[in-house]
Every structure is written in C-alpha cells, then in structure tokens.
Image (cartoon, rainbow, N blue to C red; front, side, top):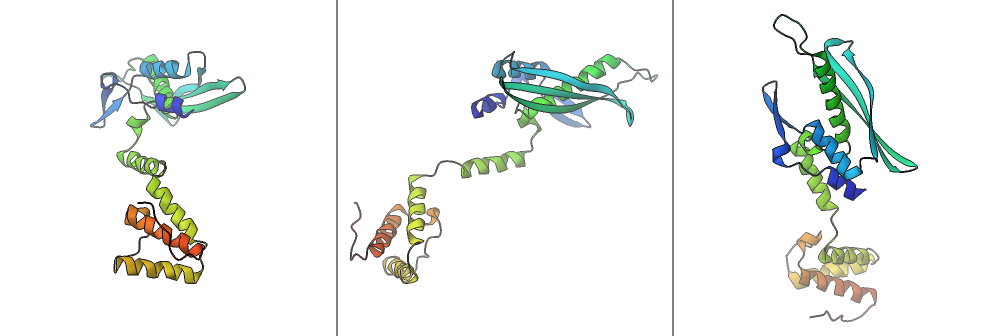
Length: 218
C-alpha cells in the first residue's frame, strides 16, 4: 500500500498544473481529467469507482451548487477503501442576472468533489497542504529513518548502563571525567564521538563483568 500511495501522491508535471485566481490569490490546481487518469493508472480502471451521492443548489445559499462524491478502491474481493469529497461551485450570471449555464456549475461542483475525494488518497494533496505541514512531515520522516550504526551503538550503551548499580554508574562518570576532563558527559548520540562511545561501552562492559580492563578494537 505504501508503494501505491507514493505513486498516487507523486507531484504532477508542471505543464499539467493550471492557475486560477480566487479572491485575488493565484491557486494551482490539477484538471479533474488528470486526477482520473492518475487513479486509472495507479489503481487500475477496474479497481475503483466514483459515485455521485448528491449534487444540488445549496439551500442556505442558492448561488452555490454543492456536490458529494464517493470514491471506492477495491483492494481485494473482500476489502474496499472508501473516501468522500464535498465540492462546490458558485453560479455565474450575466450582467442582467440570468444564469449562464447551470449544467456547467453542476459539472464544476462534481469535479471539485472528485478532486477532494482523490486528495485523501494522496492525488494532488501537495497542492492543498501548507509549507509548514510538509516541513513537519519531513521532520517526522527523518525521525522514523533507520538508525545509524552510531545511534545503535549509543542505544546499546544506554541499555547496558541502565542495568548498572548506582556505584557502577558513578564509576562510569568518574571514568569520563578522568579521561575527558571537563567535557560535558554526552546525553545523546550527537554529543559523543565514535572513539568516546567505544571507550564508554568498554568501561560499561568492564564494570558489568568486574574486569580490570577491556581492550577496544583499533
């Protein structure tokens, strides 16, 4: 599923992106035809369907058409993922007040709803998200990245230190001070060099086994 999501959420080529001005602000959007094409290519033409749940003029504001669309992805014969989208379109009128083409407004509201539903699958989602949200996601992704050998070794040091007695932990502190002077004791993998970490690990192992010396690999 992660591979499918990555393919669905992949940014569109710039030539497919269109610009529309709303309220004096330029917004980038993807035509609904390209959204449908993405769903067809990634999910498969016979693996998803779209149902118009409703499409009507808003009773609270008749100048808007509101559409409710449902997209279903048939993962397996017994498993279906369903996503809903709500879209809207303001009715355009002539200077005399006549409606230009109500059919176009219904079509626009449905297209908007389709894109909103597809966004929940990742299609074009990058256009709707704020820069701040994407920066946060990058930080989360970085924190979930596989640990480096240095980080694994630091975690091993923490685990081994956790079973030491108070006297032994004090001995580790004394070892650090005698070896590295006034340098602050490390509190994370970022605050200790590879050589320092090897020395700390060797000292912890020595204390655990009541040895007099542990040789580290050079």
